[in-house]
Length: 445
Ligand SMILES: Nc1ncnc2c1ncn2[C@@H]1O[C@H](COP(=O)(O)OP(=O)(O)OP(=O)(O)O)[C@@H](O)[C@H]1O
Image (tube, rainbow, N blue to C red; front, top):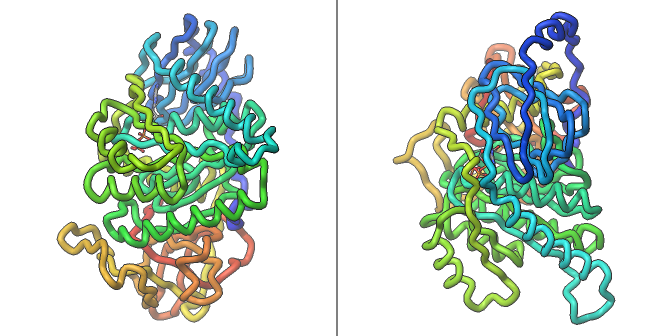
């Protein structure tokens, strides 16, 4: 399990009096009618505070506590939705805002209700005719079609109703559980945190090391298969998780090799429901053809919410950087990472497969004989700013089959002194000296 996190030092808090003086001046009240939502994009450089004055509201399936001021991060994009009407207060600068009664929430809730019926049926059945497996939902669609958001909703609603579904995150470009470039799963026991996000301490994490599967399609598939087997083993031991099923988030790559990866994931996780988001007639037809003979697989096409934000390349890059920053410094940047040093001889760095260290389309290789080859990497300045995973492998040949304990980021490589300086979120000694290198880098700003 994911152990190498969580003991980071708390930064001293800022004086909050000054903030609260300013705070009173900008408060704005918004009344939401029933089944409507306010869609908000927080300003890029300052946070937003929000509280519920009256009624019940939820953000992507997580209910907000009444009367408590909650802080949302710069750039955060979300919708505050109410089923029966509510009044909220906002304090801070908003980049964009829109209120709408046109939401797909009723259709999402209908899906949740049908999943709950299945969960209750498998949990209470003693009959051999009823499968003991809870629903396995995989959400597919174009980029920015709302896949991660709808996954969050289905998971949070299930957790609120007492189940413990497993969230499987295959979206290496915009990972939700931990840093980008990971293929991971975690059990959801309570609605997903509005700012903190998904629980990390019991997550099963594999490091792919790249933000696009094109760098090594074979490795991507291998790690997906590995994770699927690990979850089957977990479900065999744990009836509660098995009955609760899983919700799988995927990448927005739905054509060519991207489509093959979707089909592969649907098969390996033995999905029972594919939700296709958006106007994707071709994708739905292709999936229907590919799974013509798969019994017990439903393919459902749902509208994409008009509230989903489209995010450009630069914004996505910033989100990836923020995600890595969150790992080292906490969701609200309130933690200080530990700076450590190690002798070259104390660490062993490996790479999986053959990939260009810098981005170059022409040099990309995706499916070759070397795709799963483990090679030792010479320590040098090229490692500066690289994010490396700490593998639980005891030997290099176990690297692909092992999960990772966490990540470090190399800050400096001193060739003369043969020492590296790196940051880590944990004061504890690293559980292993085997590190995995991909193309993921992070430059702290
Ligand atoms: N109804 C909504 N109102 C406001 N913002 C929303 C709404 N639904 C989704 N969003 C925001 O839109 C952005 C894109 O949504 P989401 O991450 O769910 O899409 P995705 O299909 O998973 O994207 P990708 O494939 O690129 O990972 C996110 O920032 C999300 O918080």
